[in-house]
Image (cartoon, rainbow, N blue to C red; front, side, top):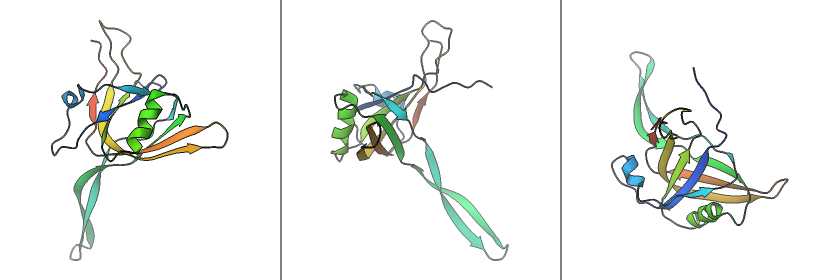
Length: 159
């Protein structure tokens, strides 16, 4: 089984992007101009969870469960504070907005061989719900994202 370090992975923010009723696909993000958010430390967990719909069947004496709606959990990101970084400034501006913004994670997992190896990516839209500075030790920017879309995954490839 292969595994890899997240060292070299990058977070980027794009522009405002409206919600839609259908799932997003990679083509929905092609118009984005991505700005890397520098100095990431903690990248957080990403993905959907189904709501649990439970029914207590008194005849069987068993609680039965079905899947409800999907919801992405909040993502907490931590960066070393850099008040001049364009990505951190864009993150702060997104916090002040009511809009959803495009986000991209580029993992450092491209194959070592191939004509033009590419890293895998994860893209989604989210609202920036919190944007706080820490003042103990190393200054840090801690942001919380609340995704409002599915997670669009592109896999690493040799071309």
